[in-house]
Length: 43
Image 1 (cartoon, helix red, strand yellow):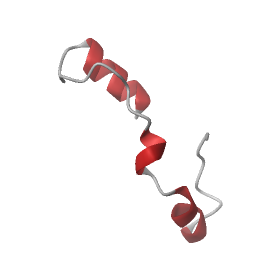
Image 2 (tube, helix red, strand yellow):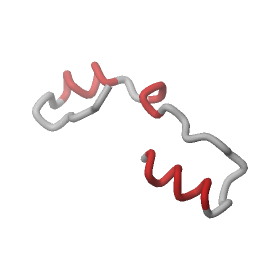
Image 3 (tube, rainbow, N blue to C red):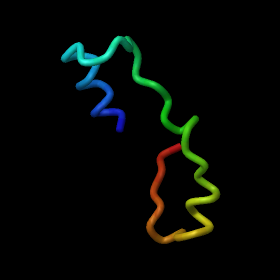
Image 4 (cartoon, rainbow, N blue to C red):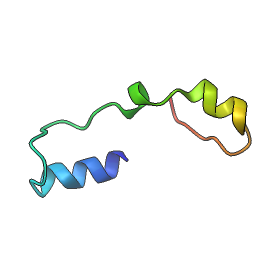
């Protein structure tokens, strides 16, 4: 997601100027409860 955000910013396809911290939008604990073996997040 971060790479896509960087691409969007560099190609001027968005008005954003900074890559957001996507961890602010992901509730990791809920994902890990559902499927702990498949969730990989670098926090």
